[in-house]
Image (tube, rainbow, N blue to C red):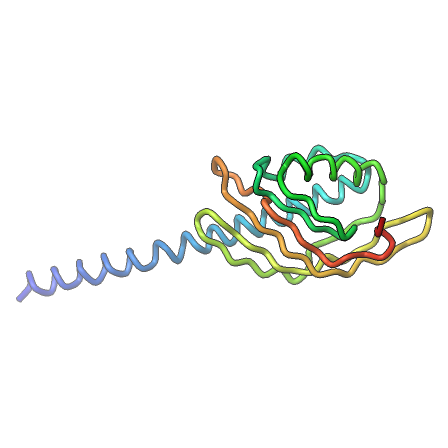
Length: 160
C-alpha cells in the first residue's frame, strides 16, 4: 500500500511542477516585458532632451521593425526607423511621457504591451498635453527584450 501512495504522490507532485513551470515562466516574461516598457519610456523621455542613443538601444535593428508614432508617418525596417529617432531627438520636445494602465501579454519570445501614453511636451514654451493610446511589441533577442513595433495615436502638434 505504501509504494502506491508514494508513487501517487510523486506523480501528482511531478504534474504540479510541469504545470507550474510554464505559468511561472509566463509571469517572468510578463514582468520582463513590463520592465522593457519602462526602459522604452525612459528612452523616450531622454529623446525629448535631444539624446536618441537610449531609444536606438531599446530597439531591434532588424529589417522587420515598424514604427507608426504621433507624427502619423510609418517607418518599416531599422534603416527607416533609426533616422526617424534622430529627427525626433533634434526637435528637443521637452516634457515627460509615462506609460499608464499597462497590459502585457507575453510568451518566451514575444511580448505585446497595450497602454496609454500620458504626459506633456513643451513646444515653443507652450505645454502640449499628451494623452494617446499605444501598443508596443517586443521580441527577445540574445536574452534582451527589444522593441520591434510601436504604434500610437497621432498628435496634431506633431503633424508634418
